[in-house]
Every structure is written in structure tokens, then in C-alpha cells.
Image (cartoon, rainbow, N blue to C red; front, side, top):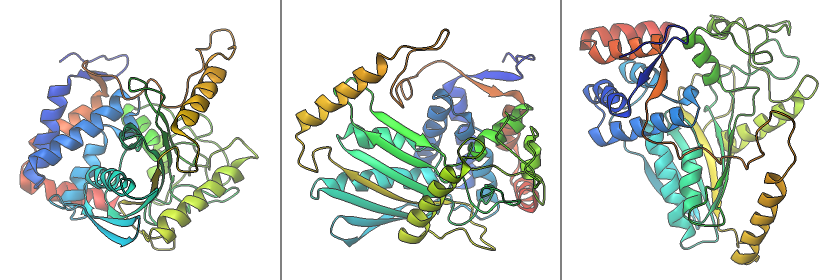
Length: 366
């Protein structure tokens, strides 16, 4: 395998990545099919240009299993609470399986109801939400999602605050496209200045954090990714928004906290919360739910698409595209993985059982 010293990455072919995921997860009690599903989810994130939700998350999953915080054999289950409403319990298992269960439940409910609402509780880290949004949109449905960290992950400081009180609380919105060959419009975004995973990816790659992603307890910017992971933290992530406009991202994060934590019952940010997984509230509905015909929806979609994609652009800037277009289609070739991460993953796959518990204990103390 060739290592690129200048960029400190290694090219990893998909079969090799899948094999490594299996070698890490199956000995830890994960079913082979579930391990393959995790591998697919992580590789999709890598190919979509989001390594923050890619192979580096395998470290988190393995340590979570070794520490007893993640149940490797858990199977999500859904139960109906009202017409058109269900709760999916992830059983503290792998988040991607819970996310798949939510998507299936949304589509199932919409077959007999105009609007589907699904609450998600007790799930492991969900990873990127965009693939789930694309799957629901491929069924001809619009999808909205609001995800928190069940009260934990408090690395985001409210505007002017000197400590973290919220998680990065992402929002999902997906809309079916105009034709079978067209990619849906998908919005998968954090309500913070960046996702925590983006900072962790910089740490693994040994790169500085871009300006505006972190500040210390006096509001001074820092480019040191490791500052976020000190105990106690020496830096915090600000809410989404430029200086002076952070109140907008903060307001969105609070709304997500109430939807995922209070309405869905996953737990809100609070003193002493130490969750290691996600909760969320998801909705789905057909684009003609309000009485607009499907043809009317498709016509409006095309009008908006034409209006935006024909925008004049600044010199050297690419043409304008709709959110989510260009993602979810890459296949085949290798992905570039930080060399340090790849070494860690291979060591994790090769570690004897007695070393896993020791590593898990060390990880838990961080």
C-alpha cells in the first residue's frame, strides 16, 4: 500500500475497508450482515466527502462495544403509539441500523397515512443523515429529521458562553426529485459552526482547525483541534452563524433539542448528562399532502432548480447546484484515509481480546 507522506494519507480500496470493518466488528459480537451495513455507511460518507462520519467512526464504535456502552447484537424495534406515529428503540445498538429502521417505518406509515412521525430513542451514533434522506426521497416522500445526542456531547457553547452546553444537533431535509434518474435535494447540516467529527478528523490528520470553528473560554479563536478534547475542554464549538449572528444557530439547536429530546423522549441537554448515542424526531409525507398535485410539485421543483442553477457565478467559482446534488453517486475507486487513522484501525482489528478491554477503559477515562 502506498503512503503519501505529503498529504499523510493512504488510498484504501473498498474491499479492503469492508474487510477491516468486519475484522473489527464481528469478533466483538456484531452480525456479519450488520457489519457490512456499517461498512457501507462509513464508505458512503467517505465518498460523499465527509470523513468526519466515515471510517474514523469505527474507532468510536469498537471502543463503545468494548466499554459496554454499545450493544453489538441489538436489533432496533418499532412500536406504534398513535395513528401515523411510531417509536423506534435502537436498543443502544449500532446507529445505522436504527436509522434504517426509522426510514423503513416512515415509508411503511406513509403507505396508509398522509403524514408519518417517528421518534427515535436509545440509538448509537447515527453518522451521516443524508443517505437516509436519499432513501426516503427515493420512495417519493419528503423527509425532515432533527437529531440530538440524548443530552450528552455538550461541546457547543451558547453565544457569549465560556463552556459547552449543547451538542451539534443536526437537521435533515430531503425532497424527491423530478425524475427517476435525478438525485433528490438533501440538506444534512449541523446547527453548530461545524460538526464535532470535522474537528476530530483534523486531529487525526494532524491539521489545524479552520478559523471560526473553535474558541476558548474567553472567546479567542484557536486552531488546535486537541483543545476540544482536553479534560476539562480548553475550547468549544460556536453555534452556526458569523460573528454577531450565532444566536440563529443557537436558536435552531435549542429547537432540535426540544424536538429530539423532549418531544421524541430521547433526553435533553442537562447537567450530568453523559449519553453516548443519538435520539431524533423524523417526519415524512408525500409532496402532494397539502393538495398540490404531484405534477404541480414537480413543476415548481423544476422552476426553482432552473432559477438557481442558471445563476451567474463569480470568477473561478463553480456553477450553482442544489443541496445534495453530486453526493451519493460516487462508487468504485479507493478512498483516501489519514495514515495515522489507518494504522489505528489495523491495530484495532488485530488486537487480542484482553487488549480490547484495556483500550476501552483508557478511552472511557478520556
